[in-house]
Image 1 (cartoon, helix red, strand yellow):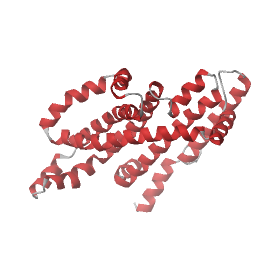
Image 2 (image 1 turned 120 degrees about the vertical axis):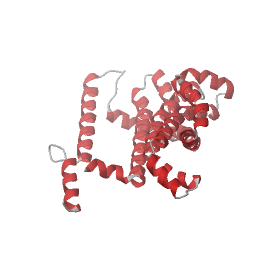
Image 3 (image 1 turned 180 degrees about the vertical axis):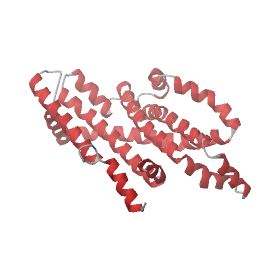
Image 4 (image 1 turned 90 degrees about the horizontal axis):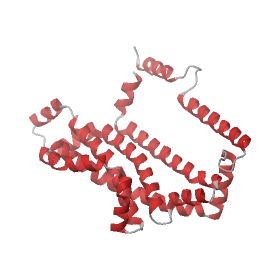
Length: 269
């Protein structure tokens, strides 16, 4: 069968029962959900509930006043710093754990203990040690993000085909070239999956940290408007957080397609 025919069959399998593309189905599903929410909210007439048009109006008011941009900037800085630190430290440490048994046995107890600990419980400790400023929030986001990256990287390295490693060794490959040419490319899907999980956990850590620390960020907006029962304004930072998660996850999926395209080819066959 030709390549064009195979692509045609794959495209046909990706179409829904109604002949719609996956993107069209997703958009239609979201539109139905938003319309149902709008209709129910207008019928309910409750001070504890809102609907999309009211949220859009509140978002316009917050943007016009500059309030949303001010708090969003603070949250983005905290999330970016915490996530970047987790990536920079988590990937090399995960590779070392996968390649060196001594490091694996030495670090594994700490990783298991900290990963099993509810990180919300350590927030008061972090605040006492580091204060209520940005540093404490960055550390909390870092702790939320690093373990999915570290564990997935470790699993990716451990799952590298031993036969390929043996072939590389037989050609006298140096250790750093083995990492660059075989181990990291083979582990790339695991690493990207770990980063994707870390994004969701990082958003949670960011909001929780802002609940307990300084009066800045989207988390503070949520608490502020919840206390005053401004439900339309409360949903604005919630929707922004949702959009941030979707956008970052979409960017990771695009990067995954560029780095490991063979995974998607295998799924379509």
